[in-house]
Image (cartoon, rainbow, N blue to C red):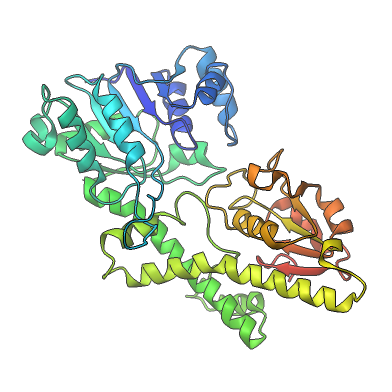
Length: 427
Protein backbone atom coordinates (compact mmCIF):
# COMPACT_ATOMS: atom_id res chain seq x y z
CA UNK A 1 0.00 0.00 0.00
CA UNK A 2 1.65 3.21 -1.19
CA UNK A 3 1.71 6.63 0.41
CA UNK A 4 0.53 9.13 -2.17
CA UNK A 5 -0.12 11.93 0.33
CA UNK A 6 1.64 12.50 3.65
CA UNK A 7 0.52 14.92 6.33
CA UNK A 8 2.95 16.34 8.91
CA UNK A 9 1.26 17.84 11.97
CA UNK A 10 3.46 20.54 13.52
CA UNK A 11 5.77 22.59 11.30
CA UNK A 12 8.52 23.49 13.74
CA UNK A 13 12.20 22.58 13.91
CA UNK A 14 11.48 18.90 13.18
CA UNK A 15 8.14 18.85 11.39
CA UNK A 16 9.01 21.32 8.64
CA UNK A 17 12.33 19.69 7.63
CA UNK A 18 10.60 16.29 7.66
CA UNK A 19 7.77 17.58 5.48
CA UNK A 20 10.24 19.17 3.07
CA UNK A 21 12.29 15.99 2.88
CA UNK A 22 9.29 13.91 1.81
CA UNK A 23 8.26 16.63 -0.67
CA UNK A 24 11.76 16.69 -2.14
CA UNK A 25 11.18 13.04 -3.12
CA UNK A 26 8.17 14.21 -5.13
CA UNK A 27 5.57 12.99 -2.64
CA UNK A 28 2.54 15.20 -2.00
CA UNK A 29 2.85 16.65 1.50
CA UNK A 30 0.34 18.65 3.52
CA UNK A 31 1.93 20.37 6.49
CA UNK A 32 -0.41 21.39 9.30
CA UNK A 33 0.19 24.00 11.99
CA UNK A 34 -2.04 26.15 14.19
CA UNK A 35 0.30 29.11 13.62
CA UNK A 36 -1.21 31.09 10.74
CA UNK A 37 2.03 33.04 10.24
CA UNK A 38 3.99 29.79 9.78
CA UNK A 39 1.39 28.46 7.34
CA UNK A 40 1.39 31.66 5.25
CA UNK A 41 5.19 31.85 5.26
CA UNK A 42 5.59 28.26 4.05
CA UNK A 43 2.96 28.69 1.35
CA UNK A 44 5.05 31.57 -0.01
CA UNK A 45 7.97 29.16 -0.29
CA UNK A 46 9.76 30.68 2.70
CA UNK A 47 10.62 29.43 6.19
CA UNK A 48 9.92 30.81 9.67
CA UNK A 49 12.85 29.09 11.41
CA UNK A 50 16.60 29.06 10.82
CA UNK A 51 18.10 25.80 9.58
CA UNK A 52 20.84 25.50 6.94
CA UNK A 53 19.65 24.27 3.50
CA UNK A 54 16.01 24.13 4.61
CA UNK A 55 15.04 27.37 2.85
CA UNK A 56 16.08 26.02 -0.55
CA UNK A 57 14.34 22.71 0.07
CA UNK A 58 11.05 24.37 1.07
CA UNK A 59 11.20 26.92 -1.75
CA UNK A 60 11.68 24.22 -4.38
CA UNK A 61 9.03 21.90 -2.91
CA UNK A 62 6.38 24.62 -2.72
CA UNK A 63 7.10 25.95 -6.21
CA UNK A 64 6.94 22.43 -7.67
CA UNK A 65 3.59 21.81 -5.97
CA UNK A 66 4.65 19.00 -3.66
CA UNK A 67 4.39 20.91 -0.37
CA UNK A 68 1.68 23.14 1.01
CA UNK A 69 0.63 24.15 4.51
CA UNK A 70 -2.80 24.27 6.14
CA UNK A 71 -4.32 25.17 9.50
CA UNK A 72 -6.31 21.92 9.95
CA UNK A 73 -5.65 18.30 8.97
CA UNK A 74 -6.86 17.04 5.62
CA UNK A 75 -7.19 13.44 4.34
CA UNK A 76 -3.87 11.70 3.65
CA UNK A 77 -2.38 8.21 3.66
CA UNK A 78 0.10 8.78 6.50
CA UNK A 79 0.14 11.27 9.35
CA UNK A 80 3.28 12.24 11.28
CA UNK A 81 2.65 14.08 14.53
CA UNK A 82 5.58 16.33 15.46
CA UNK A 83 4.17 18.75 18.03
CA UNK A 84 5.81 19.98 21.27
CA UNK A 85 5.76 18.07 24.56
CA UNK A 86 6.49 20.75 27.18
CA UNK A 87 6.23 20.51 30.94
CA UNK A 88 2.79 20.69 32.54
CA UNK A 89 1.91 23.22 35.22
CA UNK A 90 3.05 22.27 38.73
CA UNK A 91 0.99 19.49 40.28
CA UNK A 92 -0.17 19.17 43.92
CA UNK A 93 3.26 17.92 45.00
CA UNK A 94 4.89 21.02 43.50
CA UNK A 95 6.57 19.09 40.69
CA UNK A 96 6.92 21.12 37.51
CA UNK A 97 8.62 18.43 35.44
CA UNK A 98 5.60 16.36 34.46
CA UNK A 99 5.15 16.00 30.67
CA UNK A 100 2.25 17.86 29.09
CA UNK A 101 0.63 15.77 26.34
CA UNK A 102 -2.00 18.38 25.53
CA UNK A 103 -0.52 19.20 22.12
CA UNK A 104 -0.24 15.53 21.18
CA UNK A 105 -3.81 14.85 22.26
CA UNK A 106 -5.15 17.88 20.38
CA UNK A 107 -3.28 16.91 17.20
CA UNK A 108 -4.39 13.29 17.52
CA UNK A 109 -8.07 14.13 17.91
CA UNK A 110 -7.84 16.53 14.96
CA UNK A 111 -6.26 13.83 12.80
CA UNK A 112 -8.93 11.34 13.89
CA UNK A 113 -11.55 13.36 12.03
CA UNK A 114 -9.94 12.63 8.64
CA UNK A 115 -8.30 9.20 8.97
CA UNK A 116 -9.61 6.24 7.00
CA UNK A 117 -9.02 2.52 6.70
CA UNK A 118 -5.45 1.82 5.55
CA UNK A 119 -3.90 4.96 7.04
CA UNK A 120 -0.70 5.11 9.10
CA UNK A 121 -0.28 7.42 12.11
CA UNK A 122 3.22 7.98 13.53
CA UNK A 123 4.10 9.88 16.68
CA UNK A 124 7.44 11.65 16.22
CA UNK A 125 7.14 13.96 19.22
CA UNK A 126 9.55 13.09 22.01
CA UNK A 127 7.26 11.48 24.54
CA UNK A 128 7.12 9.70 27.89
CA UNK A 129 6.80 5.93 27.76
CA UNK A 130 3.20 4.99 26.94
CA UNK A 131 2.36 8.08 24.89
CA UNK A 132 1.94 6.12 21.65
CA UNK A 133 -0.55 3.82 23.36
CA UNK A 134 -2.42 6.88 24.62
CA UNK A 135 -2.48 8.26 21.09
CA UNK A 136 -3.99 4.99 19.88
CA UNK A 137 -6.61 5.19 22.62
CA UNK A 138 -7.56 8.76 21.66
CA UNK A 139 -7.89 7.75 18.01
CA UNK A 140 -10.12 4.83 19.00
CA UNK A 141 -12.33 7.07 21.12
CA UNK A 142 -12.83 9.46 18.21
CA UNK A 143 -13.32 6.76 15.57
CA UNK A 144 -15.23 3.73 16.89
CA UNK A 145 -15.96 2.83 13.24
CA UNK A 146 -12.30 1.83 12.74
CA UNK A 147 -10.12 -0.82 14.37
CA UNK A 148 -6.72 -0.15 15.95
CA UNK A 149 -3.66 -2.29 16.78
CA UNK A 150 -4.21 -2.27 20.55
CA UNK A 151 -7.33 -4.36 19.89
CA UNK A 152 -6.64 -6.44 16.77
CA UNK A 153 -2.88 -6.17 16.21
CA UNK A 154 -1.71 -6.41 12.62
CA UNK A 155 -5.28 -6.73 11.34
CA UNK A 156 -6.09 -3.15 12.38
CA UNK A 157 -7.67 -0.69 9.96
CA UNK A 158 -5.21 2.00 11.08
CA UNK A 159 -1.53 1.35 11.77
CA UNK A 160 0.26 3.21 14.58
CA UNK A 161 3.96 3.60 15.42
CA UNK A 162 6.45 5.77 17.27
CA UNK A 163 9.57 7.04 15.50
CA UNK A 164 11.52 9.69 17.45
CA UNK A 165 13.68 12.23 15.66
CA UNK A 166 17.39 12.12 16.46
CA UNK A 167 18.86 15.13 14.70
CA UNK A 168 21.21 17.95 15.64
CA UNK A 169 20.02 21.55 15.11
CA UNK A 170 22.09 23.11 12.37
CA UNK A 171 22.49 19.71 10.67
CA UNK A 172 18.86 18.58 10.49
CA UNK A 173 18.57 18.29 6.70
CA UNK A 174 21.60 16.03 6.39
CA UNK A 175 20.93 13.97 9.51
CA UNK A 176 17.30 13.27 8.59
CA UNK A 177 18.67 11.41 5.58
CA UNK A 178 21.80 9.81 7.03
CA UNK A 179 20.86 8.88 10.60
CA UNK A 180 19.43 5.50 11.60
CA UNK A 181 15.77 5.54 12.70
CA UNK A 182 14.27 3.58 15.59
CA UNK A 183 10.77 2.48 14.61
CA UNK A 184 8.42 1.18 17.26
CA UNK A 185 5.22 -0.17 15.83
CA UNK A 186 2.27 -1.31 17.90
CA UNK A 187 2.26 -4.47 15.78
CA UNK A 188 4.63 -6.04 13.24
CA UNK A 189 2.46 -4.67 10.43
CA UNK A 190 2.68 -1.17 11.91
CA UNK A 191 6.48 -1.36 12.00
CA UNK A 192 6.62 -2.70 8.46
CA UNK A 193 4.52 0.13 7.05
CA UNK A 194 6.36 2.81 9.03
CA UNK A 195 9.67 1.49 7.71
CA UNK A 196 8.29 1.61 4.17
CA UNK A 197 7.32 5.26 4.71
CA UNK A 198 10.68 6.43 6.09
CA UNK A 199 12.64 4.60 3.42
CA UNK A 200 11.22 7.23 1.06
CA UNK A 201 14.25 9.33 2.02
CA UNK A 202 16.13 7.72 4.94
CA UNK A 203 19.47 6.23 3.92
CA UNK A 204 20.31 5.09 7.44
CA UNK A 205 19.08 1.80 8.87
CA UNK A 206 15.48 1.53 10.10
CA UNK A 207 15.66 -0.55 13.27
CA UNK A 208 12.40 -2.13 14.42
CA UNK A 209 11.32 -2.46 18.04
CA UNK A 210 8.09 -1.93 19.98
CA UNK A 211 6.55 1.47 20.70
CA UNK A 212 7.55 1.64 24.37
CA UNK A 213 11.19 0.79 23.67
CA UNK A 214 11.30 3.36 20.86
CA UNK A 215 9.97 6.02 23.23
CA UNK A 216 12.51 5.07 25.89
CA UNK A 217 15.37 4.96 23.37
CA UNK A 218 15.09 8.68 22.62
CA UNK A 219 14.81 9.56 26.30
CA UNK A 220 17.80 7.35 27.11
CA UNK A 221 19.99 8.95 24.45
CA UNK A 222 19.40 12.41 25.88
CA UNK A 223 19.59 11.32 29.51
CA UNK A 224 22.99 9.76 28.81
CA UNK A 225 24.25 13.04 27.38
CA UNK A 226 22.78 14.93 30.32
CA UNK A 227 24.55 12.74 32.89
CA UNK A 228 27.87 13.23 31.07
CA UNK A 229 27.40 17.01 30.98
CA UNK A 230 26.44 17.01 34.66
CA UNK A 231 29.76 15.33 35.51
CA UNK A 232 31.63 18.09 33.69
CA UNK A 233 29.52 20.80 35.31
CA UNK A 234 30.04 19.30 38.76
CA UNK A 235 33.78 19.22 38.11
CA UNK A 236 33.67 22.94 37.33
CA UNK A 237 32.04 23.64 40.70
CA UNK A 238 34.61 21.51 42.52
CA UNK A 239 37.54 23.11 40.69
CA UNK A 240 36.23 26.58 41.42
CA UNK A 241 36.22 25.76 45.14
CA UNK A 242 39.73 24.24 44.97
CA UNK A 243 41.24 26.98 42.77
CA UNK A 244 41.95 24.63 39.84
CA UNK A 245 41.52 25.49 36.16
CA UNK A 246 38.84 23.03 35.14
CA UNK A 247 39.64 23.38 31.44
CA UNK A 248 43.25 22.37 31.98
CA UNK A 249 42.16 19.56 34.29
CA UNK A 250 39.75 18.07 31.73
CA UNK A 251 42.35 18.36 28.96
CA UNK A 252 44.82 16.43 31.11
CA UNK A 253 42.30 13.77 32.15
CA UNK A 254 41.23 13.28 28.53
CA UNK A 255 44.76 12.27 27.62
CA UNK A 256 43.89 8.91 29.20
CA UNK A 257 42.97 6.59 26.29
CA UNK A 258 39.64 5.58 27.84
CA UNK A 259 38.49 8.92 29.27
CA UNK A 260 36.42 11.47 27.36
CA UNK A 261 35.04 14.14 29.69
CA UNK A 262 32.80 16.74 28.08
CA UNK A 263 33.19 20.48 28.51
CA UNK A 264 31.32 22.36 31.27
CA UNK A 265 28.99 25.23 30.45
CA UNK A 266 26.40 27.55 31.98
CA UNK A 267 23.77 24.80 32.05
CA UNK A 268 21.92 22.63 29.55
CA UNK A 269 19.33 23.88 27.09
CA UNK A 270 17.34 22.91 24.05
CA UNK A 271 14.15 21.00 23.52
CA UNK A 272 15.71 17.58 24.19
CA UNK A 273 18.51 17.20 26.74
CA UNK A 274 17.08 19.75 29.17
CA UNK A 275 13.62 18.16 29.05
CA UNK A 276 13.63 14.48 28.09
CA UNK A 277 15.40 13.04 31.19
CA UNK A 278 12.61 14.44 33.36
CA UNK A 279 10.15 12.25 31.42
CA UNK A 280 12.03 9.20 32.72
CA UNK A 281 12.08 10.61 36.25
CA UNK A 282 8.35 11.37 36.09
CA UNK A 283 7.55 7.73 35.28
CA UNK A 284 10.05 6.08 37.64
CA UNK A 285 11.09 8.61 40.33
CA UNK A 286 12.41 6.01 42.80
CA UNK A 287 14.59 4.26 40.23
CA UNK A 288 15.90 7.25 38.22
CA UNK A 289 18.13 8.64 40.96
CA UNK A 290 21.27 9.30 38.90
CA UNK A 291 19.24 10.83 36.07
CA UNK A 292 17.38 13.07 38.53
CA UNK A 293 20.59 14.22 40.22
CA UNK A 294 22.19 15.04 36.86
CA UNK A 295 19.18 17.17 35.95
CA UNK A 296 19.41 19.02 39.28
CA UNK A 297 23.14 19.70 38.74
CA UNK A 298 22.61 21.04 35.24
CA UNK A 299 19.50 23.03 36.17
CA UNK A 300 21.46 24.54 39.09
CA UNK A 301 24.46 25.69 37.04
CA UNK A 302 22.85 28.97 35.87
CA UNK A 303 22.38 30.00 39.53
CA UNK A 304 26.11 29.46 40.09
CA UNK A 305 26.90 31.65 37.06
CA UNK A 306 24.63 34.42 38.36
CA UNK A 307 26.39 34.34 41.73
CA UNK A 308 29.70 34.73 39.86
CA UNK A 309 28.30 37.79 38.09
CA UNK A 310 27.18 39.31 41.40
CA UNK A 311 30.62 38.71 42.91
CA UNK A 312 32.30 40.29 39.87
CA UNK A 313 30.02 43.32 40.16
CA UNK A 314 30.83 43.70 43.85
CA UNK A 315 34.55 43.36 43.09
CA UNK A 316 34.40 46.00 40.37
CA UNK A 317 32.47 48.44 42.56
CA UNK A 318 34.98 47.93 45.35
CA UNK A 319 37.79 48.89 42.98
CA UNK A 320 35.90 51.92 41.63
CA UNK A 321 34.98 53.92 44.71
CA UNK A 322 33.29 56.71 42.79
CA UNK A 323 31.02 54.48 40.72
CA UNK A 324 27.54 53.14 41.45
CA UNK A 325 26.02 50.00 39.92
CA UNK A 326 23.94 52.21 37.61
CA UNK A 327 27.18 53.35 35.96
CA UNK A 328 28.40 49.80 35.26
CA UNK A 329 27.90 47.91 31.98
CA UNK A 330 27.54 44.14 31.77
CA UNK A 331 27.68 42.31 28.43
CA UNK A 332 26.19 38.84 28.03
CA UNK A 333 27.69 37.02 25.07
CA UNK A 334 25.16 34.56 23.63
CA UNK A 335 21.46 33.89 24.23
CA UNK A 336 20.71 30.67 22.37
CA UNK A 337 21.18 27.20 23.83
CA UNK A 338 24.09 26.05 21.63
CA UNK A 339 26.62 27.55 19.20
CA UNK A 340 25.74 29.02 15.81
CA UNK A 341 21.96 28.52 15.77
CA UNK A 342 18.98 30.77 16.58
CA UNK A 343 17.14 28.41 18.96
CA UNK A 344 16.27 29.94 22.34
CA UNK A 345 14.31 26.98 23.72
CA UNK A 346 15.23 26.11 27.32
CA UNK A 347 18.41 28.17 26.89
CA UNK A 348 20.42 28.65 30.11
CA UNK A 349 22.14 31.67 28.51
CA UNK A 350 18.78 33.34 27.99
CA UNK A 351 17.69 32.49 31.53
CA UNK A 352 20.90 33.90 33.00
CA UNK A 353 20.55 37.13 31.01
CA UNK A 354 16.91 37.51 32.05
CA UNK A 355 17.86 36.99 35.69
CA UNK A 356 20.60 39.65 35.47
CA UNK A 357 18.09 42.05 33.93
CA UNK A 358 15.84 41.69 36.99
CA UNK A 359 18.35 42.88 39.58
CA UNK A 360 21.06 44.78 37.67
CA UNK A 361 20.56 48.57 37.55
CA UNK A 362 23.21 49.44 34.98
CA UNK A 363 23.47 49.03 31.22
CA UNK A 364 22.91 45.49 29.99
CA UNK A 365 24.41 44.67 26.60
CA UNK A 366 23.60 41.48 24.68
CA UNK A 367 25.65 40.01 21.83
CA UNK A 368 23.83 37.33 19.85
CA UNK A 369 24.82 37.18 16.17
CA UNK A 370 22.10 34.65 15.28
CA UNK A 371 19.06 36.80 16.03
CA UNK A 372 17.94 40.19 14.74
CA UNK A 373 15.94 41.35 17.75
CA UNK A 374 15.83 40.59 21.45
CA UNK A 375 13.00 38.49 22.91
CA UNK A 376 10.23 40.50 24.57
CA UNK A 377 11.53 39.70 28.05
CA UNK A 378 14.71 41.69 27.33
CA UNK A 379 13.66 44.19 24.68
CA UNK A 380 13.01 47.15 27.02
CA UNK A 381 15.91 46.53 29.38
CA UNK A 382 18.86 45.53 27.21
CA UNK A 383 20.55 46.43 23.94
CA UNK A 384 21.50 44.02 21.17
CA UNK A 385 24.98 45.11 20.06
CA UNK A 386 27.94 43.81 18.03
CA UNK A 387 30.78 42.08 19.85
CA UNK A 388 33.24 44.91 19.24
CA UNK A 389 30.89 47.45 20.85
CA UNK A 390 30.31 45.22 23.87
CA UNK A 391 34.06 44.79 24.47
CA UNK A 392 34.60 48.55 24.30
CA UNK A 393 31.72 49.50 26.60
CA UNK A 394 31.44 46.63 29.10
CA UNK A 395 33.02 46.52 32.54
CA UNK A 396 32.02 42.86 32.96
CA UNK A 397 31.67 40.28 30.19
CA UNK A 398 29.81 36.99 30.68
CA UNK A 399 30.68 34.45 27.97
CA UNK A 400 27.71 32.07 27.69
CA UNK A 401 27.78 30.47 24.21
CA UNK A 402 30.69 29.30 22.07
CA UNK A 403 29.68 31.06 18.84
CA UNK A 404 32.32 31.10 16.11
CA UNK A 405 32.16 34.92 16.12
CA UNK A 406 33.27 34.97 19.77
CA UNK A 407 36.57 33.22 19.14
CA UNK A 408 38.11 36.54 18.20
CA UNK A 409 37.92 37.37 21.92
CA UNK A 410 41.15 35.41 22.29
CA UNK A 411 42.92 38.12 20.28
CA UNK A 412 41.29 41.08 22.01
CA UNK A 413 42.65 43.05 24.94
CA UNK A 414 40.46 42.04 27.90
CA UNK A 415 42.86 43.07 30.64
CA UNK A 416 40.63 45.91 31.89
CA UNK A 417 37.44 43.82 31.77
CA UNK A 418 36.22 41.32 34.35
CA UNK A 419 35.50 38.21 32.25
CA UNK A 420 33.29 35.37 33.48
CA UNK A 421 34.01 32.61 31.00
CA UNK A 422 31.48 29.78 31.46
CA UNK A 423 32.60 27.79 28.41
CA UNK A 424 36.40 27.96 28.53
CA UNK A 425 36.70 30.17 25.45
CA UNK A 426 39.32 32.55 26.84
CA UNK A 427 40.22 30.83 30.11
